[in-house]
Length: 299
Image (cartoon, rainbow, N blue to C red; front, side, top):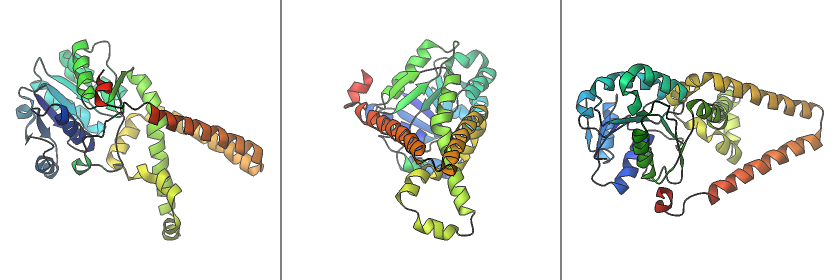
């Protein structure tokens, strides 16, 4: 890969560029975006080598195109680049929803659809923008690819190899299965964090509440500092799966409320113990499964 084009040089797009440059120092990265100031910042930070105004200019001789903009912008970007996709160019994205993106790409790209490999890096931070980008963001993180039956195996391999260069772990699954999983473990937690902060800030005593908030509130609400635009788009794109997860969560809250009303301490403790054990087991697995060295992830 000699030329990488990134649409949306923010946290994810910028971190991808920085990470790849660790392994591919001669890689030429072209940034494209709707915010000229953000692109100028990316250029000043040496995240990208050049900024392009037009998609036609950016796409010339591109080996890989990464759409790292909010998911709602993906269809428009696909329409912009479709006339300029060369036969050897591979396109991928980093969106948190996949079924909708696959449908958009199939409809927009037509005969070029096999060159599109849907992807989702499971990495991020509560801060957005290129200034938050860092080269180690994907170290040990999971990258999910959701190629369809029509996707070119060669294109999938190129995207897989790109992510392996970032020291990430790559797996594949269907787009629908991806959306079901991440509605539960990513999208719902973000909605809950936004909901809690929204609830507290709307109260008459909000200033006092925030004045006494400490570690527990900080840990739970951290992801409410994420990009509102991005999470609006994700929530709407994965609406059906997310509605099902909200219903499931509300059922658990109702169960907990019933136990509180009944003053059933034993049942509450059992519920808490099961959740605590599951969470601790998960946390331990996260620390023991990380690759010790970069070459381990590439093996």
